[in-house]
Image (cartoon, rainbow, N blue to C red; front, side, top):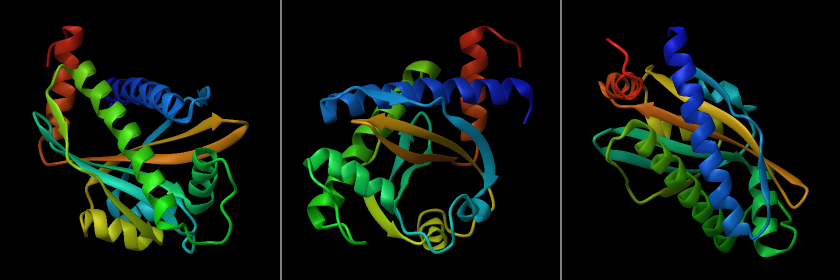
Length: 198
């Protein structure tokens, strides 16, 4: 991946995370500060290395459709999910299992943040992008990677950032796996935006 593509994806991450933070701020009713997202690419079959093998992950995933096809997943370690639901419900989450209500809260946050990111991506690329209804998932990193992505070794784009709200930090990973040909569409749209030749 050359410098142009890296810089372009960093800009997409910054814009998308900023939109997501604004949407999260409105949901929580409090100011949300955001850490500049860290960006990298990694083969799907190595994504589980982002977390400890035994750590439980709570996630929300959806599909991008229309002018751009991709899988989008927002993942939180269990402890960050508990922090998030505690802010939403105004209480502390105890134990190692989230209730149905708490899982729904995480899914709602995921919907809002992924929609904000997808809308930012759509505006930035001048492409029509639709987001399918989300599905909430939980389990070990290896099981979630297998469930969502299968056995593919394609390169996934992932952004890691931290949101700070009510003096609490919530760290999450947003993963984007473009369908075959989608990466070319993304970079062609970016070149068009800046008037660059192929």
